Amino acid sequence: MNRVKRSSVSLFAAIAIAMMVIAHLSAVHVAAAQTLAQTPASAQLVIIDTDIGDDIDDAFALALALKSPELKILGVTTTFGNTEQRARLLDRYLAAVGRSDIPVFAGPATKTDNPMTQAAYARRDPDRKFGDGAEFILKEAREHPGQITLIGIGPLFTIQSAIAHDPATFKKLKRVVIMGGSIERGYGTDAQGKPNPPQPEWNILCDPAGAKALLASGVPVFMMPLDSTQVPLDAKDREAIFAHGSPLTDQLTLLYHQWMAGTPSHSPTPTLFDPVAVTYTFRPDLCPAKPMHINVDGKGLTSVGPGAPNAQVCLQSNEKGFLDLLMQRLAAQ
Image (cartoon, rainbow, N blue to C red; front, side):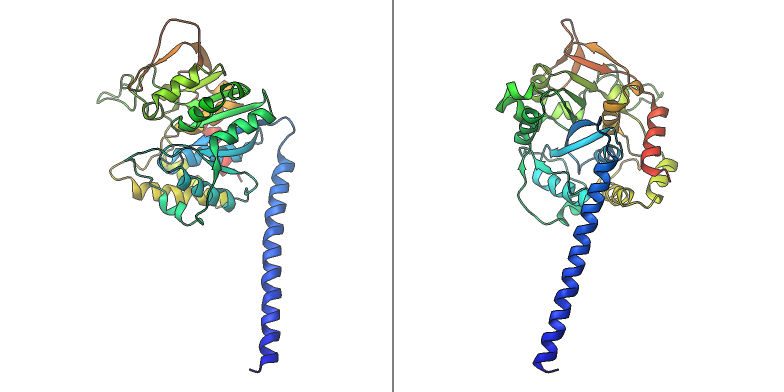
């Protein structure tokens, strides 16, 4: 082929590639515009702080939030362990479901031996530096005083960092809803099928100081402990979600199988701790909360003590109502 023909082919190829890029960007912008159009003006402003990438319930919690028009997600921050890698996971997840309009930020990194089961999913996203999660929370609190619900579904390191940096601005949050604590029951049941006694719950265990700082922050705290969040996603419902075939449920399918492969010797049935906290923000009737004074000891054990209430705590959720809502949002035709 002579040089003129090669130049023509190269020009046509460049034009074709440019058209493909424009079409892709247009599709992303249309998807974002459609999402914004479907978000009611009365939607709650929320920020989600998550340790996504270890257990699988964070991925389901984010999926539920994305499919809930009652919520407008201002951004997602990561917490605990390799927070930059968690941010990469979120970046890929949100791009895959057409929500690249939602910004992602990384909280402070911490040491941990806990394996990140979904690290391979995260590594498929290009490595880049993410903004500071604590600063993002504070910036949004300044811009929307008294309007933002912060949903904490991981250890509280990023939230603790925001409080330490600027406690007065942190108090501009409307409220903080967390999955955490153990009041009257611990994880699982004993040989007779009775709930185990209270024990340190993971999110509080990893950062008791963060829990203490939050409870003393002056911001209304709503706590969803082990008592109300141990909701199993059985095989029938799980397969219905995976078979749905939407971009969102396809990501859940990928992440679920990485979680299974990366977590030896555990049940294939996920426990949906974190989605209960997301649900509470717009359906509090499914997890009625009572005012309590919550103490946190140095080993992460939470207990009710005397004194003025410092949290609203849900000790029993409507599991059927919660699962019906989850399935309607994630797998309905």
